[in-house]
Length: 367
Image (cartoon, rainbow, N blue to C red):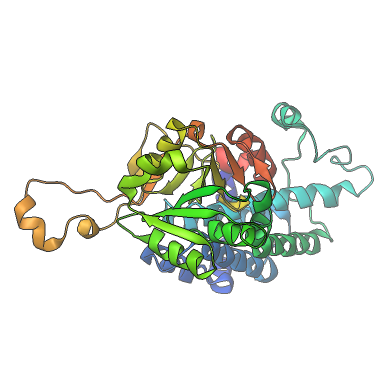
C-alpha cells in the first residue's frame, strides 16, 4: 500500500532526527497519559511539531517530507487512537505538501503539472487521479519556503478560528430567542458571548452529567451578563418546546456529517428533532475527520472513563452483579444535525464530503 511504501523510505537517521527535533516523544507521552486537554491545545501542539519538523529535519524532496510526516501521524494516532485532531492536522499538512509541490513544479516550463488545476471539481478530482503527479521526489528550490508560508497561514487560521466562528453568531441568533446548549465548548461560549454584544436572548444550559461541564459554562455566560438557566439533563425533553434553537460544540465531525460529541448529545439532538427545533454545531474546520462510525463500533469510536462518577465506590458492594459503563462520547447521526458553523462558513452535513476533498488528499487516508 502507498502509505506503507512511504514509511519504508524513512531511514533510521530520519526517524531519530524527527524524534529529537520535534520532541514528538513528549507529545506522544502526553497523549497517552491524557495530559493534553482540549482540541485546540492538541492542534497547536501538533502544529508546533510540524513547523519544527519542516525547519529542522533533513529532507531533500516532498517525498521525504511526506514519509516523515506519515511516520509522525502514525505515532500520534497510536498514542491515542480515539483522538483525531493531531491526525487531522498531519493529514492536512500532507495535503498542503502535495499542493505546494504541484504549484512549485508547475512554474517550470515543460513540467508535467503545468496544466494541473488545483481547483478542479470534485468529480474531476475523483476520476482523473491518474493525471495527478505521484512522484514527489524531484528537488525544488522554492518548496521549503512555500511550505513554511503555508504553515504560517494555517497557524494564523488556528489562532483566529474561534473569533471567526463567533463572528457568524448574528447569522444564527436573533434577539429574543431561547437557546439550548449542553457541556462546555470554547467555540459555543465565544459564539454566545459575541452575539450578546448586539442582542438579548436567553440561554438554557443542561448540566451534562456526570462530568457537570454545563455548570461551568452556565457560570461563565452568567458572568458575561447573559440570561442563563441551568437545568438537569432529565429536563431537556420537557423544556424543548420553549426552545428556538439548539447550539452545541463537538469533539469531531465524522466523514458522513455525524458527530462525536459529549455523552448526552444524542438524547439532546433526538429531542430537538422530535420538536422540530434546529440543531447547529459550532466547530473549527480542523475537527472534520475522514473517519466513519462502522456498525457502531464503540470500542474504536469511544473512550470509557472510571464509573466512579456514575456509581460511587462505596456503593459497589451493593451492585456486585452490575456492569457500569461510563462513555465519554455519543454518536449523533447526520440526520439530526441541521448545519455546522465553522471558521470557513456555514455548511450542511451533506457538504462534509466536499470539505474532506479540500482539507485532505485521499491517498493519505484511504491507503
